[in-house]
Image (cartoon, rainbow, N blue to C red; front, top):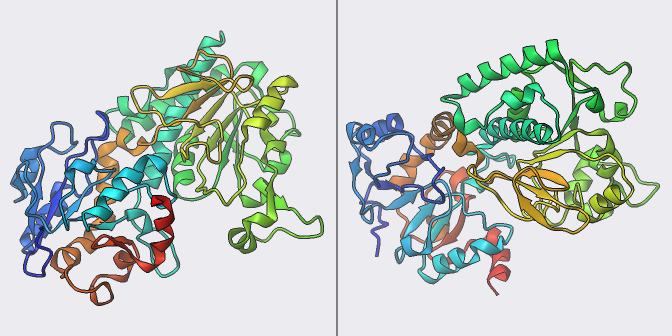
Length: 438
């Protein structure tokens, strides 16, 4: 059993191994040094891929070793393999279980069986329910790079040589700033060369307005962008081939009340999504590239259904040539996102007529970018931001006595809200998750 008492003031940092492209860390060496100086023992698993070297952690005062079983609580980024968990252990990471994601139910079962404690970053919130520890902005940054790269590749395959073709995936830039400088060159090319007249107005539609959306817009706005409102789509006056038209969609553009006499109300939609239906397809034929940045769960209407895609293609109507599904909910708001991709194989084409998929950007249908580890493509900046957000809570988590009853567990309220499992039992806000394991 792991020593979870208050006398063991220690944490562990696990090496990330979800795929070969995952180079992030939850705590950077500078913040580890601050923890060590405050009396926290820090164990770090060695990693040949992590963006910060083992030597940097050693110099920060950490114990770099494969066995981190002595740590009271282990921090990671992505899901951990079932073989890693110890009886009675405590773990903090993005578990991707709160929606009942099927692929992670064996992991959740193992945590329950071993009597483990699970803290999920996704549920660390303030008193108003706002998330405090996240990679959202960096998912948006990398996601827009990769989506526009996909546009360049798809258009090149279609016979169009455009400025987008010089864009690379985010992971191939040495830093975020290098990527932004390259986008500035693309911007000048669009301003001088223009875009093919067949795609004018070139409209990039972005769903959502949170951290992910803001990150995506931060990259897109480097280009010569003119923002328009959803109501203007299909009626843009004198569209220019030297501009990109950006449109941001909010909830009131995506759904409408089922009752024809009702008026859209945002809080009512959040509380009673069953009273609303999706209407987003009214915009699809006016969008060249769709970038999806919304949070979604099955209670809410989908943005783009497979049936709508099939109908558009049957009728020969225009449809986005690329969908950058940054949110990457499998068969979720973009129902054609039938699988997640990774930075090494980032794209697939979905054929609306057959429902089949083909890896790459050359197949028939719509190209979809659905990487579920996008921030890993800009690992240094993403890790530094994440570590800054996490650091204020770590020492208190390291010093807490995790052996007491949950009601007596002395943790910051923000962290206590994120405890999904405590000693193998679901805490009150997450008891609904028992149904996922049946």
